[in-house]
Image 1 (cartoon, one colour):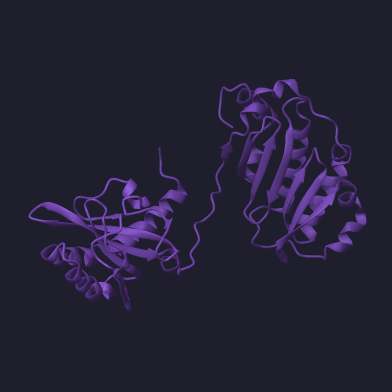
Image 2: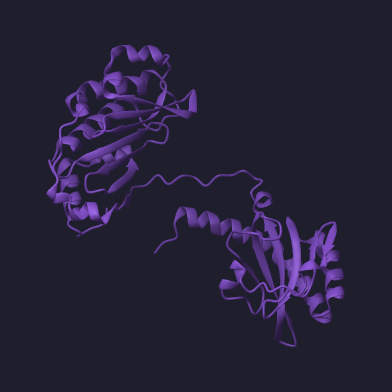
Length: 325
């Protein structure tokens, strides 16, 4: 199995942290091994080395049984109140601990600082015997100060829904909704709003007869309209004229073509039919949810390459349990 884009981004951030922390923590562990397990000496070494570990906000030491033997050492303080505390229930102790070198925990909530953090564990050895570990905590807020986001996935993804819905899909039938009765007017209006009035994302709920719209000029809020509101020609008065954005990943013509394909999928089969759909012109992605509760997210260009027989065949097999959706 290949590593996903998201997993790769997480691994890169952890690798960068390990590369930064491993050298200073290895040096600190070598010094601590010589005075292990004397708390006062460990505190002195942890405090002296604190500024050598970039972004670290807490250092402490514990033995192979998970008992803390040092104080909690921060940049300007040493707190001995946690000496002797059992740390064996900490999230990072649920993994295989390193005999040598460094290991990074997953993100968890620190009981001491009440912040989300990652702990780097550095093994402390003497004469090839594992004595315990130096723990360095890094606050997530400090590690993510670069504000870089993981790029969203823009390839076809499929998700299965509720098994109970898939199991009874062939016992159901599409019921004509008010939206179905006005679908040509609705598609025409959505196309107009997306190409001329600054709507960049639209979601259509066919059975319940509603449409949700997101605007380029007000992206943090969305508008919900029922069928009769959205097909009213005067609705355009509520959405000022806005040029089609140059940054859009699809063309106005493709907005029209996608909406027409949505309509075709809604009426293609009376048992397996489109329940809701969405289109985002800025990233060129669309979403489909069918009566079998399978959901698909894919680029509009890839969607337009498919035909109805592809979807009906794929979804029929999915509902029957023969393939993933």
